[in-house]
Length: 257
Image 1 (cartoon, rainbow, N blue to C red):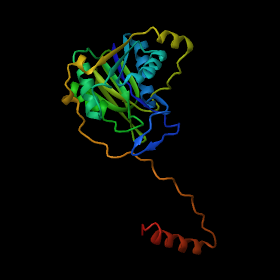
Image 2 (tube, rainbow, N blue to C red; image 1 turned 60 degrees about the vertical axis):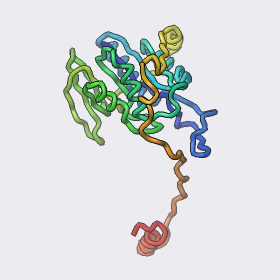
Image 3 (cartoon, one colour; image 1 turned 90 degrees about the vertical axis):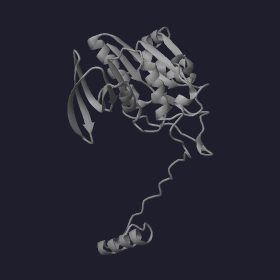
Image 4 (cartoon, rainbow, N blue to C red; image 1 turned 90 degrees about the horizontal axis):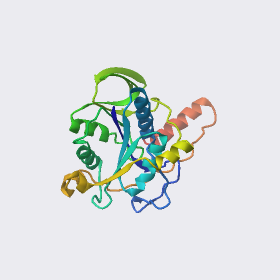
């Protein structure tokens, strides 16, 4: 099987993120593989081990993303591709990423593409479905189970706390949800092997794309942190007094009544 994983380098939201003048300060920020993409990497490896073939992880970004690609190789992926846009794309959005990936996959033989359900930085969940539409293949989002038998595929999809069972065929793109598997940690032997695994670097010119073909369709006006939560308030006294005070607060302060 020809299995591909779409991987994104994201901020580590467990670490402190600083916003200055409407943009995130990248100096000193910690970066990781988007956590939902880790489920995609793990599932790709599992499917390859069951059915044979090769797992290739692909990312669109700058040379700093090589670290995250090497981590995926250490987990067990076979090859990695970095589409470096640092010199060619000043700003981008989901359309930009999809158009670049479409050009990359244009002449590839694909059986299965896996991606994270969303990226934790922008959480749009658009790139996977957009790419599948552009490639003309089926897609299923937020999967929590995947079984392949020949070219027949059985899936379970998370639908707001319930499960939808879907049968389809390869080629297929899926986006992966928490609960699909338990991503492995790279082992020391895996880390050593990853250093020797192939990592190909491409640029926009290699994909025969012009700058105007990847111009974003959206514009970010401002980035800001959410306001700090105010301390809670405990009402005291008799129950009827608490009710009166609560109604007064909702009407006069919260202004929701």
